[in-house]
Image 1 (cartoon, rainbow, N blue to C red):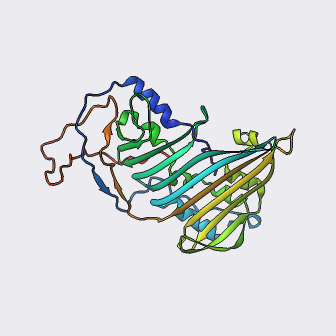
Image 2: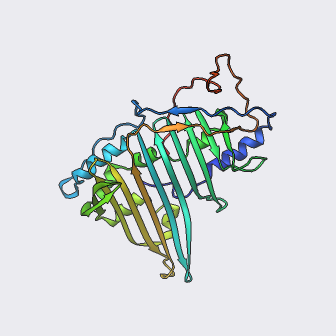
Image 3: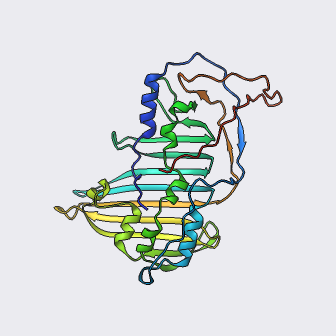
Amino acid sequence: MKFRVLFFVGLVSIFFTTACSALTPPTPTSTPAPTETATPVPTNTPEPTRPLATATAANAVPPAISFALNKTQNARSMQFEFESSVTTVQDGQTKKIPGLALQGMDSTLNRNITISGTTSDTNEFITYQVIVLGEAVYIKGISGNGLDPQEWYDLPEAVQAGVRRLPTARGLIASFDPADVSSAQFQAAGSETVDDENCSVWTANNAKYAQTLVGVTADSELGKQLGQVDNAEFKIWTCADGYIHLMTGQVLGHAAAKTQDTTTVTLRFHMNRFEEAFKFQAPANFKPFPGAPQAQPTANATKATGATPTPTRSATPSPTP
């Protein structure tokens, strides 16, 4: 697996700028009542089933990791936290740059995620909250052109692509290549309790492939920033329920011309509550996105709740980043 998303590229801000320049503010309309969606454990699995990692006798994947990786990659729902950062020491001055960070709940059809990070173009730290309910997308945190970052907005399908391309928990875990895991040569490193589960801790014995699992390759921007790599580590926690609950990684390097100047890349990926039927709900008092055409209430609106029925939409899983 190669984490190519350590820095938030600002897809949402790019989509927002483009969309707002093409849309005009709408006339005021009444705010729709919140809708609620109870998500059963999905029966469809958009991610292809991954085969268990194959290995040679000299480079075998421990059965516990092979089983847990396959099971976790095929999980249809989970709660998660993912965070990454880059810490530099230059001329004795330490600076920590937040990378991509996500937390929330993810399923095959719906998700509720808070995403933040440092944009690669402006070095600005930004945070958005996104709720996806089938084909409906709501976002909070965008600003400019009269938009309030404290308000929720309902995005029309024409401007949803940038949000749907944002990383998801299921996409991140699915991007791990069993071949890379095999090459990292994991060995047992004790046991710990995570999420009230008894877990085995595994540490990569091959520093080169530990670096690969973190996503730092020689031709990547992070690889160039690191300069000469001094150390790389990667750990996996496989737990009694058969899932991977935690992954951590760190790569340390120094500048070739100035060895005291160092760069450290870290990541942490925590997962739990697998296969739960999460209840996702549209935010209360969301507003229409500027310039978006508004759906009209139908004659079959439910009077008891005051909710406006939402048109039926086909469930389209978001693409894997």
